[in-house]
Image (tube, rainbow over all chains, first blue to last red; front, side):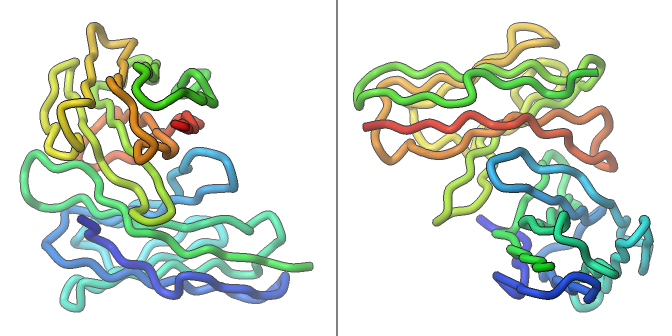
Length: 112
Length: 114
């Protein structure tokens, strides 16, 4: 079953604009992670935010986490054509013995 | 490090045939995961291992699927007999620390069962 659900399913923007993707989840978590997948490739880990953190930055990426609302957002600033990919949130549930559960992803298209 | 290595990259097989997918995790990683990705169901966890021991195989669809990890550097996922509904991209991933580490994914095996 899916733990995280991304919104929107698809997003199209112009180069230089910011892209915001949202993720909602259902159960208590240890951490939440974001991954990128280019067409035909495996997933690449982007950033991890722990349950006691509210915001984290990595380069042009900014992730927020609201555990009271069970939601997270990924912001990509000043987007580039190379950012075109699918983005997935993954939750590491608090329950022991569980692996990451992935949402269905947001497909981002950045045009030049 | 060459990353997580999966083989083959593509597999086309006839219904009823046995299929074996292979994975070499990153050296030193003690967790290994098998996921399946389809358009309809997204990424589904099939099974994962810790120190070569299967921990959770509740995602394995049915008895036709089996996975082994005979040593720290090799794992297989076998489907016997294969069916058209098994067509998907199968990913292997490994992780050094859990639960706080990110996963490193292989490039996947695209399986088509005709």
